[in-house]
Image 1 (spheres, rainbow, N blue to C red):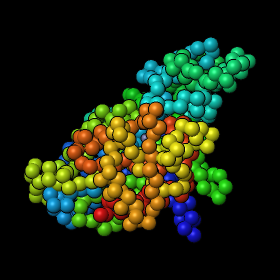
Image 2 (cartoon, rainbow, N blue to C red):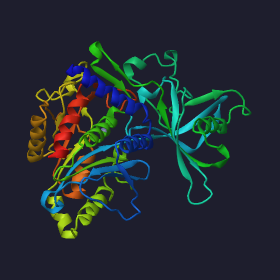
Image 3 (spheres, protein in one colour):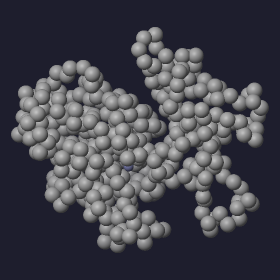
Image 4 (cartoon, helix red, strand yellow):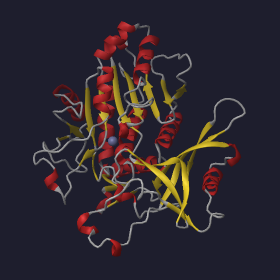
Length: 435
Ligand SMILES: [Zn+2]
């Protein structure tokens, strides 16, 4: 029974992932869920009116979102309860003048975004997703989300007969030369990028003549799935970090009643490229919302600074599960497993923001939610990845803990997670946001 509910939560995550091939899609999917739950959309350019209990959200640059439930207490006295995650994922982005003919093929020039496991992108049925910018009678072009509904392109591997030692040497890629997908074969008359754009525009009900620009990514076509014995595993793209985004979002929506402190979640863009963008964790996005929440509760700058000093933040991102075929890459005392609950991520070099105090905070939340918790440390002779935690903690001065659910194949086009972990993370975050 309990497992059945956990599987339902996992299926809900898979649905969220399926509609979120890009960061912009993830933000739109999150906004749709917030709308359905009665949250009010606010524009950063407008004057805001807020009262205790109000549930609202705002979107920055189509790729980031901050949502909150206004608390009952004075921010200067009770602070904020923050949870952060990211909407972007590593992958291949189309260049502005992407299309070219080569050896009779139409190909698309791509740039690498973040650090994808490139070998997982080849020999898969790929499509395109992103935004078309549509000219409007007045004002700037309007972005329209598009998502190819069938395989449109592929990066074919070179046959083994040309590289007999590839299984011993490993796949190696010249990023400029070896990654452009093919979208068709034939003559210059048939192979036009415009036809590809028309397909996407038609799918979104947009007149191609009004499209002035596009921002497209190469994405997998295989739908996310539950798998393994007992449906205990998740096979899906972008679990890093749509699982974190979904967990924060669901915990906030399910909170129902406001706590003393305002609950605030931030789904940032650009984590995979260092967070230093207009909608990344290094930007003035969350600060702006928190300062407004303080001001609208009657407090000034000093009250805002006092509120920050009383706040706590949980940064949610994926963690590395022990890999059965490569267990030697994991510290023997800190091997974390799928379906064993949230993982505390700790690093002396501060690649993660966790401190003993913030770890204790999160463990306490897990204890109250009756959720198990694991501890992860990267091997001392390897360099850990990082996340939004240290960047957001530095920017806000708010004590922060880095946590995540364990996954395998992080940054593969298709990652593996535990089907029962999502429910556990949502419960733990729910405790944190309401505390
Ligand atoms: Zn991540």
